[in-house]
Image (cartoon, rainbow, N blue to C red; front, side):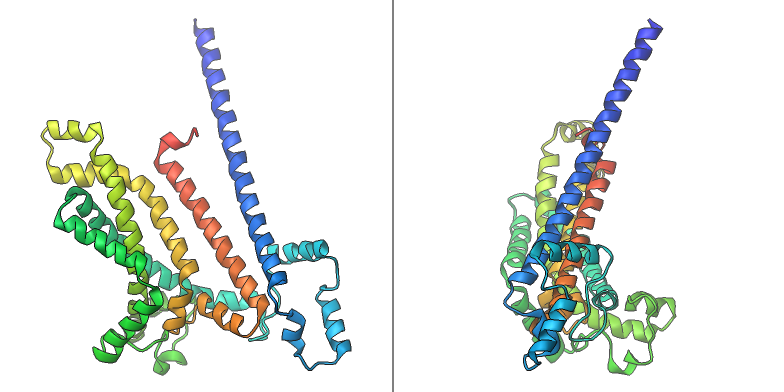
Length: 355
């Protein structure tokens, strides 16, 4: 009897190990396929856009022999499949070429400007999550009430209003009229050449160095564009929170908890929201990734020196190395955040580990 039990346990463990291995294999294949697709798309975008990278470097008045020599040096005279292999090899090694606009390696430019985008998107996501989750819970608990309608209207406006229009309107109101925030940019010119940032995250560095006057100045610059992004994040997070909470509040364990006499506050915040928090992790992660890749217009309106503004200026100057390098980095970050949220989701919800 003991031997048969041991054999059954062994077979069960083997099945679990096999299932885990297959899940890991599918995960790896999906990730590699996504990254490969991203490389393919960015490569062909660079070839389809009617901008000659050679002329962008040497100018349209350069002699023909200079144009041809530059084309050979860039490998653009090779067959398309060879150009793709070279592109993949260089991209995987972090070599995105040299920016025509700044004359610096594109990777160095991205390392310089990307922290500003991360700082802006992080604060925006925090605002969206801190306000969006309670509003979503309120809308679910008060389903059909005035509060529910107000929350849904707030979300609808966040989905419908163009971000550039709302950004310009907020600048007119909070900067030009009320003077509550600082002018567009990331830091006042008074501190621009005296403040030294070691990480690229101005708020963190100013607090770490104890320069609270710089911290206040940076905060006055970041709060308006971050609030704007936070509002759009709030619209998405509150809507999904409401949906998840409505699903949880209809479950049998909620009925059982009420039958046991638990308070409504405890049922909502410690039981229903706790279970709804598992899929909310993915929602917040996707919202964060969306702000990282979708802050181009916000950075342009507020002159925020991040990756979005960098790509916009590069595109206006036909600097395709910078445009494709920035696009590839944003795509890779989006894929990475998706992978992280999926792993976190599986960690928090054991039911998904066997799928």
